Image (cartoon, rainbow, N blue to C red):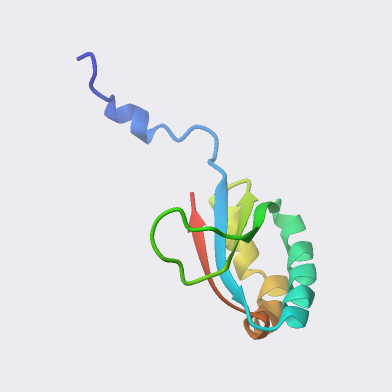
Length: 108
C-alpha cells in the first residue's frame, strides 16, 4: 500500500550509524578540568572519536542543571562504547570527577 512503511526497511541496517557521546558538565576545578580535557582528547584517537561541539550552553526551552556541553562523534556505537570502557579513558576518570560534575549519554 502506498503511504505505508515497509517493515523490512526498518530491519535493513545498511552501513553503521555514527554514534554521539553527549556530555553535560559544570566545571568545579578548572586546572584539573584542563588536565583531564588534554588527556581525554588523546584517548579518542584510536576509536575515531572527534569533537563536534563544546562550550557553554544556552537553554532554548526548560531548565538545565549544567553549564557546558560537549558532543563527540564516533564512527559507530561500538567505537563509542569501547572508548568509554578503554583502560586509557578509565584511568583518567578520577581526574575528570575532580574537575567537573557531569553526565555522559550515548545516542546512536
